[in-house]
Structures are given as C-alpha cells and as structure tokens.
Length: 349
Ligand code: 13P
Image 1 (spheres, helix red, strand yellow):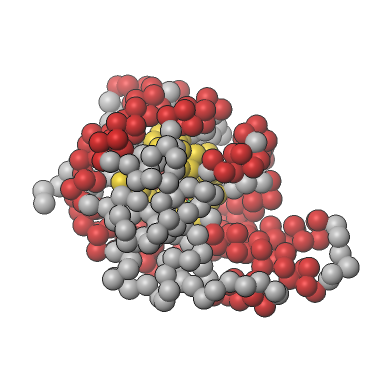
Image 2 (cartoon, helix red, strand yellow):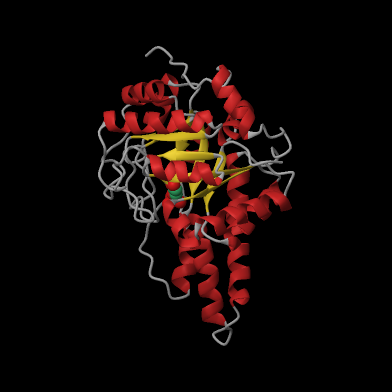
C-alpha cells in the first residue's frame, strides 16, 4: 500500500481508542527493527525523522529506506513523518520528498531554541497547513514548549517552564487547522526527564485531560514519551556506561493519556538506550570482535523488543489490517471538499 497519511492513521486510532507510537530513525537498522516489531505485533506504524536524522543519513538514503520498508511490508500501513520542522522551508522540503506528514514546531523560533510568541506560532503553522493540505499532507503543530534538547532542537530547561495553556490550545487549533496537536505537560526530550518517579506535580496529566475536554476531537500528541526503563539504564551502566539515575514517563501515564485523546506518542530515547546497551555488552564480553554485524544484530533485536512492547502497550497491535490506505492525492481532495475539515469541535468550558 502507498505511504499512509498520519491523519488517516490517527483518525483510525481514535475510532479504535488506541495510541500509535512514532519512532525516530536515523539508519537502516532502526527502520528494520520497527518494521519487524510491526510485523510481529500486526501494527500500523509512524516512522519519523528529525532534521538531525535527515542531515545524518542524507534525505535520499533515509527516504528510500522507508520506501524499501513499504515494498517489503505491503500489508502494514506506514506513515513517514517529519519530526520538529523548524521552518516553512524545512516542511516544504520534506513534503516535496514525499513525507506523508510534517510537524511544524512553531513553538520555537527558526533557531529551534528560542520560544516563539503565540502569534508567530499561529502564523507559521497556518502557512504550513495551507501548503500541506493542498497537497494532501497532514500537519502536527505544537503549543507550549517541551523541556530538554534533542538533536540540537529544544529550548532546554525543565518541562514545566512552558506548559500548554488550554485556552491557547483551543485558539491555536481553531486558527491553524492542524491535524494533530503536540502539547507540553512537563515532559522533556532525552533521558533526563525526572529526578524521581513522576507524580502530578511534575507530569501534568490533569492538564492533558483538561485540554482533551476542551478539544475532544483533536488528536493529541505526547512528545518526550520515553519511559527510560531501569533495566535498559542498568545494562548500559553494567557494561561501562555512566548514566545518572533518571526517570521517564511511566507507561501507565501514557495509557491514561490514550484514554484522554492522545493518539501519537513519540519515542526515541528508549530505542537509543536499547541499542547502546546491546552494543556495549558485545564490546565488553567479546572485545576480540570487529565485524559490525556482531553488535548491530543484537542492537537491532534489542530495539525491536522495545518497539514491539510499546506497540502492545499503546494498543496499536492487531490493527494493521483494519483499513486500506487513502492515497495522498485523495487526502488532498478531502481537505479541499471539507470532508477532512480540521476545525476542532470545541466543548464548552
Ligand atoms: P524521547 O526523548 O522521550 O524519546 O522523546 C522523543 C520525541 O519526543 C521526539 O520528538
């Protein structure tokens, strides 16, 4: 089947009441790990690439790897998504290449570091929405600013510095017409999110629930959603790593989010941890080895295990065969004739 729009994938997830993991990739082995996990669990998938990933792998390599996945697993709906686009031009370049959805992260200025004003965010996101929808491509926006820095992108600081204001979320969704909305509820990108198991004082699930009540039809996106499991930290440290003690977002909190409108869950760090732990183990236990396949195979298998686990936990497992892909050209018609209207249904306060 052709690449699927994230919009279709998330509409289906909303119908089925489940969430879909969006896993970041930089190379072939990560794509293979995701696809094997999807096959194992019969899951639709969102594969996403940041600007850092596109620069690392080069656009054409990365995009053709996704097309290879699409050829090899025709039964699995695959969406190819740009993570944290920083400008109109970045989003346009992904759309021209063939990505089926883009994120315009207008919560930050083009430098990817400085928080933007609400008005700037609305203006740039709306510009991307107009361009993308005309071409059938879905758009994710962000309101509020996440903590931490990933691939050089982020305001840094704590996840609590710029949490989303529900009134602004409603206004933003109405004014931009985004297909999905990333919100800031205290999470950060990277491994160091929380200094202890998070409670409601640092992970604002009540805020998420309040936003969902106001925007019941809007697909919410949770960024910075790695759980940073202790066992993956331990493997790294057991074999010479030096991770400091840290906590991520507990899976049960993500599942609470899924019950309250979260449809897309971004995960990168957990996979990085799994890969690094597996490689460190081979290096420590078999220092005589030098064939990259000797450590890339266990690394790929370790990532597959994490991804498959998340697919089951998020509820997307078993749903790969539920629907046929709507072509991106037909999505464009749907945006034009209003059947894919993104005007949110706003509930009374
Ligand atoms: P993690 O660092 O928690 O995996 O978050 C990834 C992410 O949100 C990518 O946009």
